[in-house]
Image (cartoon, rainbow, N blue to C red):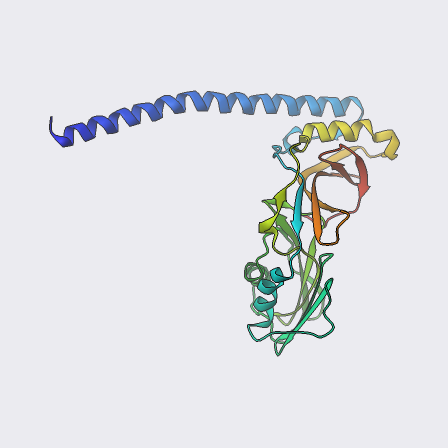
Length: 283
């Protein structure tokens, strides 16, 4: 048999196998989707029985998030510092193990091990599209953005863009960076951010509870929290920073952030503990 015919037969067999596998996967995916929709509708009905409004479509698909830890390393300062201050940057004499100061002709930066960050720039990035400028600067600094606000006018010629850092594809609610622009030129960055997050390690085997479980925890804690609201607006999954015994290690705990008509509530994804919290300024 000619080689070309053998090749065509093999291709035909592979196509048949692919069609067969798709015929198995698609019904399973549809069944999974229908099952989730049914669960979400039950949640909507449950909340309605308590006189509360919850849109079933606002309940997101839950991700398997785990406890994470990050070893703080001063070497991780290099990427953001050189992105903002250039290659000819000097570490200042007042730098310590917990607070690093850097300076160049382009400005100065201070990086704290608790995540605090401050930069004043004399020759910052510039452009008419402030969100695009912010996006480019973040990329150079090695920071992913889970959320970026629209530019907000503070005064004549002065605008601010706020960013929440992304951690493994979800928001890190413990972070917030403010980018200040004067006449379309970046002059200052300040807030909380964690460097070197590509090096985070999973330290627990227990996955985060689902969005549905988190909502049930919120409902069962209603009286204890003194929650007198009537509506749930949004449910978001992400991380927060939690304390450890070591000053050189940062722990990130998965949480659910629930926005209601009377404020925000945070449900610990591992323990299920429900607490009230402030807005993370997400849109």
